[in-house]
Length: 64
Image 1: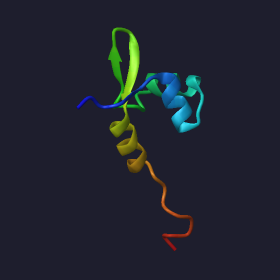
Image 2: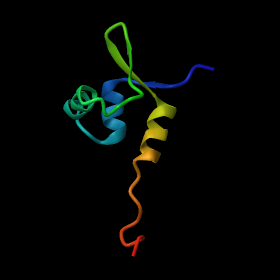
Image 3: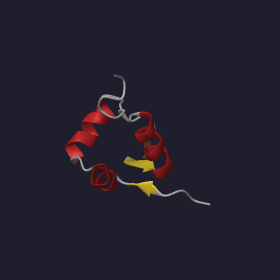
Image 4: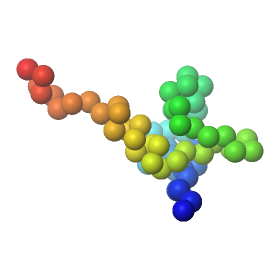
């Protein structure tokens, strides 16, 4: 089974951030799951989902 891949535009739309932010995050190595194929960046949907889960912030006041 071939896994869904996001382009930079699709990832930016999915995350509700700009393309510029995606490129900055790539330069800062903040997207360790990024794959470069013949000069174009791609992102596996499952890797994006897992990354988002790892970067969740708990509910406000949950640690009180």
